[in-house]
Length: 59
Image (cartoon, rainbow, N blue to C red):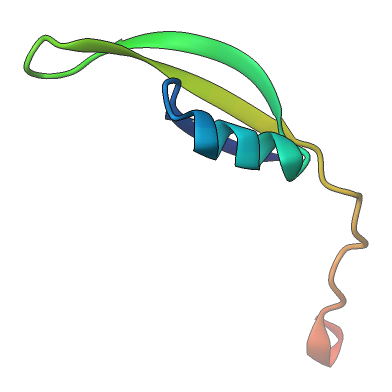
């Protein structure tokens, strides 16, 4: 699974993520060290299963 996050107010980036197959799964409020608060959007995209890599040298 791939996960990405971004500032929730960045509509262009959020649209790009969604068009690339990511799903918005959460909006969270974050408070910076200076005390300012803002929202971030968390995106997830499931990846297809891949076979385990084969080890070289028989190990």
